Amino acid sequence: MAPDTPDTPARVLAFDIFGTVVDWHGSIVREMRMLYPHIDADAFALAWRAGYQPAMQRVRSGELGWTLIDDLHRLVLDALLPTFGLAHLDEAQRRHLNKVWHRLEAWPDSVPGLTRLKTRFTICSLSNGNLGLLADMAKRAGLPWDCVLSAEVFRAYKPDPAVYLGAARVFDVPPAQVMLVAAHQDDLAAARACGLRTAYVERPLEFGRGVARDVAPNLQNTYHATDLLHLADQLGC
Amino acid sequence: MAPDTPDTPARVLAFDIFGTVVDWHGSIVREMRMLYPHIDADAFALAWRAGYQPAMQRVRSGELGWTLIDDLHRLVLDALLPTFGLAHLDEAQRRHLNKVWHRLEAWPDSVPGLTRLKTRFTICSLSNGNLGLLADMAKRAGLPWDCVLSAEVFRAYKPDPAVYLGAARVFDVPPAQVMLVAAHQDDLAAARACGLRTAYVERPLEFGRGVARDVAPNLQNTYHATDLLHLADQLGC
Image (cartoon, rainbow over all chains, first blue to last red; front, top):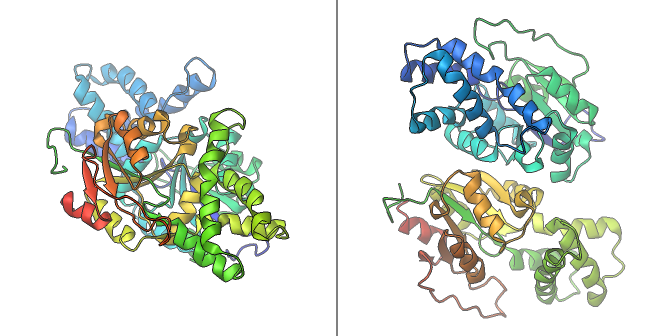
């Protein structure tokens, strides 16, 4: 049982992935510098990620039918390449580059932190990334999930309540027995509105060294942690 | 790359679960003997399992809407209890007993075999069992899945082609790069019809010592293995 509230202990920790568990910005920058050293890798990574929410919005609005994140990443990528002088990339190169999201590297504390948290909790991903992306990433980075959960299972993207409530339903527990772990206050607020507990993780470098982030505690979260090892400390793991 | 067909190696091994990876009969018998020593545990386990296919058929026919296997197991259980003199079980007892399917034990070769196979392949479950059931089972039994896949993801039960083709789509590979591993020829035949490779695993004791099973090779399968260690041997893991 988790030590925080003995009467209704959290049983499941559900993790946001991009930025929370893996370093998308650093990973894309490193790979772009290897593949295409003449372009501004930092600006490229930020621009790619900036296209993510608007692309999901096209699905939410009904303009696009249900679409996997791999395909949304590709839509954004294709639109972006000419801006960065990469319009000449062929299909195989685009396909390979798009899969960089399957090859994102974990923050240094993620694998040891998850390994400790797994001893007391069921740990799962809860990401808008598709199942194949999350499974490839976990295998490569060694993320020890008990279960890979994705928006794909619920056919809705966070912050749709269907995703947070769906995670509780999968494990047959009340929402209060699931805690979302994320580096983004909007994700946590949406989970809280569904009755989940929430743990904020500071990731000051999510957008690289050039973008300052406010990582101040929000007292509405159940926990505030500097990283996943600090969360494990607080949860008695 | 798998050594069998270098031009289109299998990348994903998808495993049937009940009977193939875990010993449902032995596990239920052991638990029933502890909980309710006066009833015929062998007959009880066989009767519960015998209700499984007819219950799924009620969903396939449209009589029932989409239903998780946990809920189908419970429907069958409730109908079964009076026959075995257990009509007096209360809600908490029924709920606990129904979750025995989350507590099934692995065959002795399953964890070491999967651990070896995982070094060369993406390994996932591909079961009609629901995600929560499969995740609880994996955590308890130590099954080292890269991804827990279930009929629940595709909202169709095997042998519906949507399940086999869905697994290939999740991993963004052609069906021939997925191999279904199962102890049941009908499951393998349905996978083969969708273009998957197939590996048969002998589980002569799936239904206990009282029920003889034909485990003879079928040459239509890509591989025939006495257990998962033998499959790992053949796949060079």
